[in-house]
Image (cartoon, rainbow, N blue to C red; front, side, top):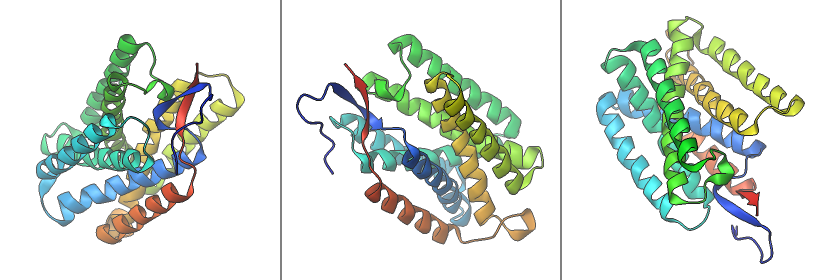
Amino acid sequence: MSNAFPAGDETRSSKVPEIVLGFWIVKILATTLGEIGGDAVTMSMNLGYLVGTMIFAVVFVLFVRVQIGLPRFNPWLYWGTIVASTTVGTTLADFADRSLGIGYTGGTTLLLSLLLGSLFAWHRTTGDISVTSVRDRRSEWFYWITITFSQTLGTALGDWVADTHGMGYTGGMLVFGGLLAVVLVLYVATRANRTTLFWVAFVLTRPLGAVVGDFLDKPLAKGGLDLSRYTGSLVLLAAIVLLVALLPQRPARVAH
C-alpha cells in the first residue's frame, strides 16, 4: 500500500492515521492487548511491575525513535508503537498505583495532571494539538509523550472505576462505552471542537480496553472469564494485524 500522494495533491500528510471508524476499532483492540500483554509479563511471568515497565519502556522508546525517523506515515510502525505504548502504560500505571502505594485515585489524579500539562505545553509550543499537525519531529515528540500519558491514565482510570468504586469490569465497560457514545453524539450533533473530542475519545478508549482486558483474563471469583493471557494476547495481536492489512490506512491530511 503506497502512502505517497500524487503530484498536485493540495494536501500535506501527517505522520499519524486519518481518524475514521477503523482507527477506533484498532485502537480499542490495541488497548485491550496492552492490558492483557502487560499483565502476562508482570503477573503470569512473575517479573513484577518495575521490570515489566523497564522492558516495555525500552521497546516503546525504540519504536518511537524509528517512527520519528521515518519521512512519512507507516501504518505497521504506527500501530506497533501504539501497542508498545499501551503495554508500557499498563505496567507503569500498575507500578504507580500498587508498588508505589499511591492508589488508583492518586494515580489517576497524577496522570491526568501530566496529560493536561503535556497538551498545554504542546499547544503553547506549536499552537496546534490536532493530529493533522503531526508533521515534524517536535510535534511528533509531543504527540507520543501525550499518547504515553493518556495510555497510562487510561489504565489507572479503568482500575479506579472497576475496583475503587466497585463497579466491576462489566460496570466499567458500560461506563466508558456510555461516555464514548456521548462523545459520538457531540461529534455528530454539535459543533464541539473536534480536536478536544478526539483527545477525550482517545483517553476513554484506553480504560475501556483496560476493563475489557481485565474482564477476559481475571479469575472467575473476581468477575473475569479467567482466559489465558498468552492466548488472549495472540488472538488480539492477530486481529490487529488482520485489520491493519485490510482496512484503509491513510495518513491524516491538511489542506495548504
